[in-house]
Image: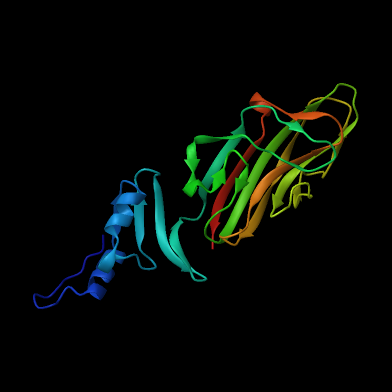
Length: 221
């Protein structure tokens, strides 16, 4: 906490209180308690930092391009998820991977929708995505398998960041490969990222240690 000496005749004006509060480091049990306390003369100002006990996150109030809000520290994990049941893929089209389970309940501001597989942050910045995928099909079937991330794509459209070799043709099952990391600038309003997969023959996603994985990390401004 910052230290400031106040003269006996100094009035505790709103500006002075903002200076005092914004220079301190406050802890709150949850978002509701924070927002209830920081109102009126104590309303958040850019640079104010708080610690959230429920999420174990340090947040800073920023104004980025006119969008104000509580931003996490750089290198904060937004979510990590894995798929809990197999998913059949429609043939020869890019299919969104859905039905995720969030690891340890970490889902910053609920930006990730586990049911739809869509990640949509509400403030702008750089985000890094990573994931992995395994697909299994009929034995002795030669198939083209692809996987990657898709930014703002309509259903069926191609991905923007593919697996390392872009496509894998195989006669063996299952087929496993990692989706490479991808960094994208998200606008904090309409931008959406998801994992998509493509298969030219009857294919399902893997399970257990072969289950699809997906995560996002906030890198900063």
